[in-house]
Image (cartoon, rainbow, N blue to C red):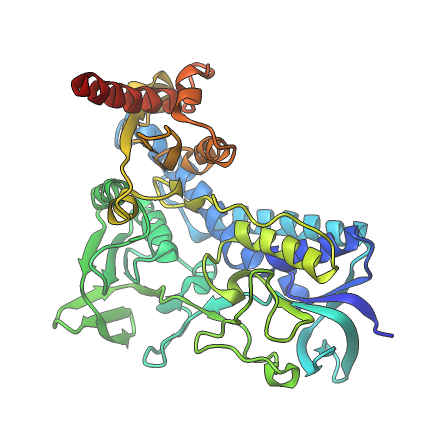
Length: 467
């Protein structure tokens, strides 16, 4: 008889939810993670620290209030790393306590240490001592997450040349910074440091950034970042980074040389599977350390599941949580509904972006007709009250059955607002619902009604011309 019905490797969003879901189903559950990493990368070095830091930046710089009080408005003149770190550490501490409490309340056994496969059903846990503890389980869930990918050609020193994990350990706010990679993480940090007054240069080998987002919204973000003195170098590749006593020079293949106090690499993520001894379980990972799973999150070995960033796209905390819950239900043989196809994407840049559904480019490529309805925050009373004159919400509506095909939001509260559209889409609602609904006034949510009326008027105009 095995020690556990279900054993989870990793306590990030996916691992937590898998463990708690199995415990709720009455199974005996254990979870393995390093003592200083309860909550995983999400709580300790990734999502939570970066979003907390963003909130601190917005507050201390007074950036959002400048529309009302003038461009020189600031809450604090000299913002230090300590100012940002104090709030971040507080939130990390509180979140860790919440997770420990939830695991304890659900009688999940927490085993501190790092786990590796000894056999398909056996895990060796190396803790603080020399001795490795062996535990066995009927089912195993791998939720070990990822770490920043580090190119071999770059001499990282965690001070001058850093990755996204090194951001929260910086000893000062740099005057100049090069961000290599214009993915989600790179652009989020680029916007934060630009808001702090750092002169940021973003280097990206592709033609555009965030190419999975709506083009119009990405262009609006780019405009705002340029307004914060961000320089973009698209279609450029880094040849080398020369570390010097007082900074670094980033050399591009085109011959450009960019001096900066700090260089941050955001070159994708690497699955943390290297130390798992996957071969002992009959498993393999790809070159990025990712594990292949089926629709039920089962790996090639039937009793082993994998969830979260370690299985690849979309690598979001929100989707990882749901994957963990579903994997636990499948592992326990309990019926469960599949993950809903309309999943929102939230990007915590300054200003933020969020969307659900398809983009204009994707619909055009698929030859799916659509009408666009747009609402701008500057035309809303709430937009004037909060001083957001740049925000916008865009609805993509099917002229055939009037259903929402996509919702794209840019500006204050975008990651919250998108859920209204997600709910309408998930329930099969139409643009008519938004036209006829009464929204609180003044709110940003009212933008849905304005955008819906805009789309409706365009469709009515076509109908009128068509006779």
